Image (tube, rainbow, N blue to C red; front, side):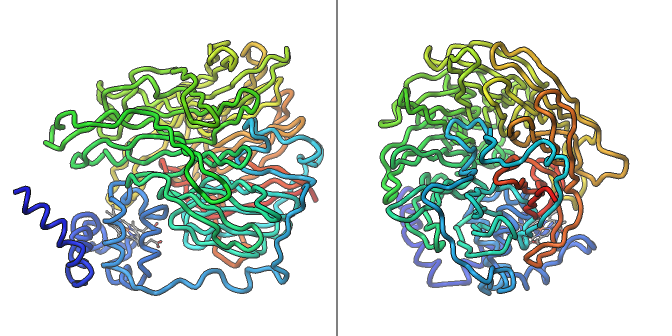
Length: 607
Ligand code: HEC
């Protein structure tokens, strides 16, 4: 038996390349098992097989990776996605954006000392998401008068989940199609595009490299890139993790020639399939030399998983697993530490590294300390709703390193449990205070990030209420409650007491399905103003002092885009607003988790 398996493993690749028929048959098998139920029925909403066969394979993979078929793609390995796409689609190479989308002068030039910048996940490496006045260049009065300047459409996408990096007048942003765009912040015209292997949702960090600059970012298939800022040419790329469900969601952090890459995965969702051997992914942080991408260290967040028995369907199960790192690591140059927030375990046995704030040595990656906030949290889509399942209380957002009003340093961390924590970095993360700002839950509580100026910390909560989708044709896996969730709270950094709270408004009657008042997106602060977003499609500005609403804009509508692509906005989730040089940028569209799709990057400025 063993010999036969070995022989097959040896022959298979040869046969694959020699006989397109066999390669096609595995794609056909995937199609029959996973696609035919919908695509072989006569239904106005579903393109039949003959229509899929006119699409390029690249577009079909994209639909499964981050497009309309995301929910179906969730249960398919990469190999199966590519197989079914090659079986169905054409080999047409896509032509890229039309010439009219490009600037007449395509020069990209970055100043040695930029006057204004929002570089990476946060303007500073402490991840406070606070933009100082000299870089924001936007007064409270100007915020009240913000107007839409331009909209850019991501062609063929249904999700817009990447935050831009903006340095003086230069903007860089990723997309679900895996295109990284260089464009002018003022007008949204393109200078170059770079095609990554998979969707790019991570924030982009610009670092000097010799006399020029490099963009550092990850994609949703585990590849990490350095691309020349001036030209969009690839400098190097490395696959930081080869697990099939690896996803680089959080953006990189950097310090003195080293870039720190957080590694997460979608295996938790994939295990909704009882035939999937759950779970073998382990979260990690990888340190790469910026010059050439050489790996300096990799620190795993759990032990190697081993076989732990079988599930009710007889599929093997593995553990420990999970503990993904979803957010940008925070550099503490003084203590030589890197702080990361970790996610839950996917399968038992549970570990004491999940749902924790962990400090790693910058030079070696050694764990200096780790403070777990929720123990016994093994959660995956397969056990959801059962008693054996943990509460899914990840840290999805970056720990923030901040000087409190009494000059003491604190680490502020928001959790999906709905609790905001203040830890003492000088005492191995000892808890200084904790305050509940939401109910918490799977996709509840604080998800993508808070903002702080050192006096106050501002947190929004998701607290979305969802039920399983039952429709035959709607591929979204969940139906969202349009009346539940959300809320923006200001806490005093000194002691965690509440300064003010603004409750979210339910979605209006007639709002599109997927509208929700939940507020999972990251928060942003400039002097005097807090920017927050919502799954109801709004971006809002509040007074930092009182919470009073200063300005709001509903992005859930169609837009004329500067690049001529049909554009629409939807739910806002994931990255928060980016405010720099008198402008405000936000991506809109997020059908994942049941929200409303969309494909635009929007830019606002005072008139
Ligand atoms: C539960 C039903 C269902 C299943 C299963 C399903 N699809 Fe679809 N598919 C749809 C619907 C509905 C649409 C139209 C979506 C829309 O227009 O928003 C669609 C659209 C598409 C599109 C067009 C997307 C675009 O960008 O225009 C592609 C490609 C596609 N499906 C591929 C697949 C493949 C490949 C599989 C199997 C791996 C699959 N689908 C499984 C329901 C399904």
